[in-house]
Figure: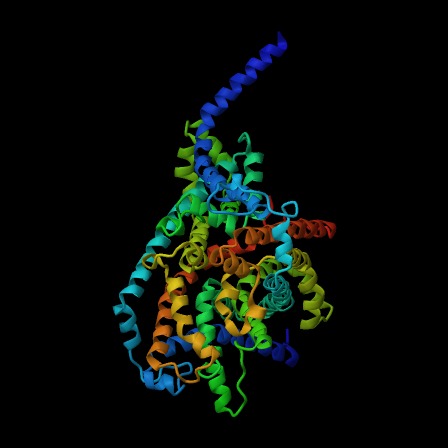
Length: 288
Length: 314
C-alpha cells in the first residue's frame, strides 16, 4: 500500500502531540531537579531553566544534615511499609471469603461493605470518633483509620473470582481447608493483583497529607508530605503575595531538593509495576 | 415425619457447612470490625448535626438544636463562607469535567494513531507519572513554575519582553491554573480506560473503512468514537455523580490568601470551621448535606446510565 502525503502529515502531527505531552509531563520535574542542583547565585538571578547552573550538591547535603527532614523520610518509609502490609493483609482477608459462592451471608457482607463506599459520615464524625478512642496525635492514627480500601478490595476480589473454581474444588477434595487454599493457591496466583493494590496503598500512604494535617499534631510524627507542605508554603506564600525577589537562593534550592526527596521514590517504583496497574485502572466503573 | 427428617438433614448440612467453612468467617472478622468501628460508628455521630454539641456530654445526651434540630443547616446556608465553598465546589468540578474529561479521550485516540510502538509506550509511561505525585508535590512544582517573579514561566516571559501572568495570585488565572494542573495530573492515567476500550474494537471495522477509502479523520469519527461510546457515557455519568464531591489536598495545597474566594471548597470549609474552628455541629451538618446530595446524584447517575442501556455503576 502506498502511504499518501496526507497520511504522512497526519503521522507527523501525532508524533508531535506525543512529544509535547512528554515534554509537558517531564519539564516541571526537570526544572525542580535543575533548581535543586544549581548555585544560590544562579537561582537568585533566575538563570535556571531545565539544566543546573553552577552545579553543586549543597542543597542535598543541607537537607540530609537537617535531622527533621531525614527523620520524616524514614518515618514515612516505615509508615508506608507497615501501612501497606497491614492493608494487604486486611484486603486479602476481606476479599477471599467473598469469592465463595456458597458463603452464607455473602450478600449481606457485600452490601455492608459497598455501602461504605457510597455513603460516608464525613470528616468531623470521623475526627470525633478518633478523639473518643484516643487515636488523635498517636502514630496509630496514620496507620489504622484508612487501612482498608473497599475499591482495592473489589479489585482483588474480582481477580480472585476469575481463578478457576476447579482448582479450589480439587484442593478441597484433598482435604485442604479454606485458609490452606488461600495461602498456597490463591495468594501465589493473585500476585499480579496484589502487586497492583500494594502500589496503590503504598503511594497513598507515601503521599498521604490530609489525615496527618487533621489528626496529627505532634511534630515528630509528621509524615513527609506535611513537612513538605510547611516548607513550601513558609516562604512561597510570601513570594506569591508580595516579596519580589526577596526569597534567598538557598531556601529556593532547599525546597527543590526536599521536593526531589519526596518524588524520587515514586518515580523509581511505578514504571516497574506498569503492566499490573493497568488492569487495576480499567476497573473504573465498580459493579457489585 | 418427612418434614422433621428433612429439617434434621438441613441442620446436619448446616453443621457440616460451618465445620468446614468457619475459618472464612474468622477471616472476615477483622475487616468487619474495622468497617463497623471506622465507617459505621461515625454514622451514629452524624446526629450531632441536629444537636447542640458540647464536649462535656456524650453525643447521645446532648440537647436538640433549635428549629426542630435544623438550626445548623439553616446556619450553614446563611453562612457566606459556606455558600462560597458550595459555589466553588460546583464550579471547579464542572470546569474539571468540561476540560479534564475530553482531554484523555483525545490523547487516547492520538496514541492509538501512533505507529511507533516504542514511542507509544514511552509516552504512556511518562504520562502516567503525574498521577502518582501528591498534590503537595504538584503544588511545590507549580509554585516554582508559576510564581509571579521567580517562577520559570514568568522569568521566560520577562526575558522575551512579554508581560508576566499572575497564574496563582489572581482569582481568574488561579482557576485556569487549577484546572490545567488537574488535566496535567490525570490525563495520562485516564487514557488507560479509553485505550482499553479502543483495543476491544474489532480490527475488521478499520480494514473495511480503509477499503471504503476512509481517511484518518473519517476512521476516527466513524469507527473509533462509536466503538468507545459506551465507555465515554459511563465515565461521564460517574463524573456527574461526583459533582458535589470535593477533594481536599488539591485546593488546599494550591490555594493562598489572595484567591480564597475561589479556592475554598466544602472539604476545606469543613476543615477550617470544624477542626480548626471547633464548630462541630455546623460542619457535621455540612458534611451530611454533601454526603446525602452525593448519594442522590450517584443514584440518579446510575439510573441515567441504565436508561441509556449501559451497565450502570452500582
